[in-house]
Each structure stands twice: as structure tokens, then as C-alpha cells.
Picture (cartoon, rainbow, N blue to C red):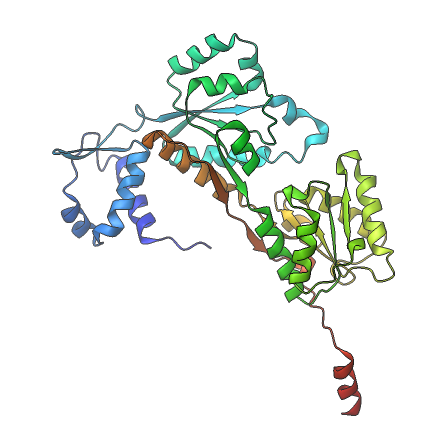
Length: 375
């Protein structure tokens, strides 16, 4: 459970008082020194709480007059969420992370006094670009979440959105998307995440770790991956690295698992590129009666599929969708307030250990074995 900081405790207290009407619209707060004394905190603790309330349009701070409560319902920040519904409906695109991030963004927006207006990209493409820009600006939209990634620069809607000159945030993208689009992008640091996964598996005693993933490896070079394997003191056998075109169907995943498990010395752990691949890895292992984690441990990337409900529960390097959403909403509010663009933001990930990796592997060298034989 995440411990609430003093700043967040004061922020939540003041927000609750505003929303309950204890501090009605137009209420004038005492100066910072008096308010901090009343709340029994320092001004250093109080100021960030007031700044966050200001970003959310719950208060207004006027030089020479003081800090006032605004009417939160009339002054909500309006942000458009641009989605591509045809991608959400595709049966082969069940791995679309936006299915999981969007509800979290909606929750974060509700907490932060933000009004979201979801718009299908197709409706904007059906209009004349110049007229579309005029309508967006006239509507009072103050910023845009674009739920897209892996941009090429040739997207037909890209020019239209640029013309609005509104703050645009890509909540689940990559560094290349920031360069290509010119928009602010948020992304997991997959290099760091991958290194964390390898270190964890090494610390639990594994030495031969198989990797099954897409050919792009989340923009990680295979040579870098093998360097990290060596740095973690794992076996750098290239046969343990299985890069596949997983969109060809689950048989491709089955074949990759089979190839690993049929090696003369099979891996004791499999590191999966995606939790969706992990479902298929589980299916193959269960079918072949290969036990998890007794025969082979499984660690996944993502953690968006209900890992607790798999048999056994699946250990994951999780993106933390709600943390990403909270950061996304706060970031776009800052962009709107400061009228500036941020280039690239790294989003958090965390290791959640479940039953699929809980077996610890013990290794003994020959000298240890000889000493044991003599005792």
C-alpha cells in the first residue's frame, strides 16, 4: 500500500472541504502562513497542495487579493481523448493497452476536476481539416490525449491536430513518437524494465533464462539484451533468445516455447515480452504438463490481464496503468497552465512477485560438491 505524503494529505483535505461546500465558491483563504498554522503543517508542505488545486481550477490565486475557491463545476478543464475505435474492435488487437489505460484516465480526470470528451478519430477525418481545427478551438477544448503510438509521421490526422496548437499528450507511446509527432509522449523505459527482470531472475538463482518476444523487443536491440544477460551473470546462449512475429497466431508462440524446452539444457525461467504471450506460454506448458514454477518459472511484462487469476498467479513487471493515468492528467494540466510542451516522460513500472517465480534455484559448483561429499 502506498503511504500518503503530508502534501497529498493536505491536498485531499482541502479538496474535500471545497467539494463538500465547507469552503464555498468565492471563499477567501487566509494567507499561507495562517493557513499552514491552522492545518498544523509547514508552508513547504502547504504550497504544493495549493498548486495542485490551482492546476485543477479549484482555486484561483490573485496577486494582492489572495486565494479564492472557484466553482469547480463551471470551470472544469476540458480535454479531448482521441481514440481509434476500429483498432479497439479488431479481434487480433486484444493486447491494445489503451483498453486498460482509458478507464484509469477517466478515474484520474474525475478526481482532478477534468472533463473528458472522447472522440473517434474517424469523425475528425471525415471533416475538412481547416473546419475541423476551427470547431475544436471553438468548442473550448484545452488539450488532447491521443491514444496512439508507433507513429510514422504519415498519419492523415497528424497535420490537423498540429494546427490546433493545443497541448497534446500521448499517454502510452515511446521516445520515437515524441520526435516524429512533436507532441509530448509518455512511455515505459523498457531497457530499465528488462534489466530489472533479468536481475530479479538472477537473484532467485536462475542462470538459463529464455526470452520470448516480438521482433522489435520494445525497441531494445538484441545485442544490448545479450549484454544485459551477461551483466546479470546469466547464460548468454543466443538459443535462449526467441524473437517471433506473434501476430501470426498462438502456434508461433507454442513453437517458440517448444524450441526452448527441447534444448539440451532447457531454461529454468522464461521472460515474456507481453502478458498476452504469457497466456499462450501458460497454455503450452499446461498442455505439455510442464509445471510452473517447479519445472520452469515465468515472468511477464505488462501485468494488464488479471495476473492474480492465472494458475499459478503470474509474476509481472507491471506498467501501473492508474499511476500512468494520474501522471498523464497531472502533466497535461501543467502543460495547459504553463503553456508549454514537455518532450518525453518516463512512466513508472514495478515488480510484482507472484507464484509463477517463487521457486528459488540453488546452484553448487564442483568445489562445493566435493566439500559436501567429505563432510
